[in-house]
View 1 (cartoon, helix red, strand yellow):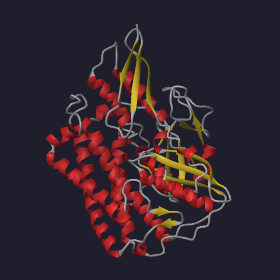
View 2 (spheres, rainbow, N blue to C red):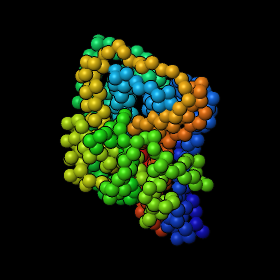
View 3 (tube, rainbow, N blue to C red):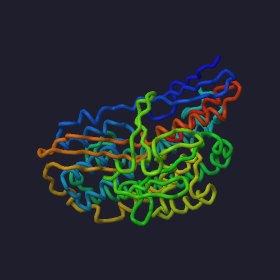
View 4 (cartoon, one colour):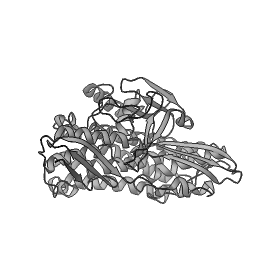
Length: 449
């Protein structure tokens, strides 16, 4: 008789999920699915609200990346009202977006992912956690905590709140940045850039070289990719065009407000999560490991694959080394961790670029706003993937319709594919242990859902 192996909860992720692995009569994997409750209801209960209130509401969708929802929402409301933020307001928004990425990437790699590699994927779960890292490498752990605190407090001191922010407003930003604040943040970002370069070097030596067999085995699937690029094809996490790419490198580009022409949203009866897919490549939707239809991935590896280059020097050098080692469009799921550290360098460098521009202290941080009927689509790159907020307003400037595709949602179908691939490749003839099941979890953790 077949049986079901249940992993509940999936540990060390920024949310809640479980995995069900179905074994046939011979003890081999017949199917595997990841179950998550992603319904939030915000699309419905913001209807009727004044649009300018919404950016202060939707930041509750996620306590890990509230800045991304806050900023995407503000961009959507800008579009509804036909307002263009002032240059300084635009720069301050992007600065907060970049700084929020810094903290998120430090959190995920060192607190959530690193125990699998530093302690070992087969180690007992009682030590395979952040406290195990504290005992094994206390100096490193102390440095990680200090760096994340530095980044978090930098945002809080300037913007008032690091979590559930209110500083961005329709038309720009709520307050200018003082010269003294700019200088203080410049110094903090230089410190964080030094740490980000150390973090990537540490991971190259202690993770990616030592675990090549695991990287090439666990969760490997073949999909397309989605990310944001600027006019030169460079990586951008705040503004630009969406680039939807096949695994072979062929791609289409489109403005965010045309996302519905290229991306569909599929629902499976066994999941609460919507599963976006590329409408422009294949008819229909399929998670068949051998012949997937319309499946693409978002998040760090996807962003590095779709971009032609990175516009900051240290991150570009890291990207070139990455591509030299793994090719132009690598598919290995665990390489999301490597890509995450390259992006950590980029967001530190980009923060420094923005802060080095003295015009960011201009006191004109908000354009005049007048509520009216319209439609706006706000898009930014959240740590977990491309984030889309699509709003329509009535003559009074109140929300009448909304649609949101959050970063993790793009990866719901690919995560299920990666879970099935990992389980199928690891569990044979009914033989499994906690170490093998943890490697199945690692396929999920790579996506940072």
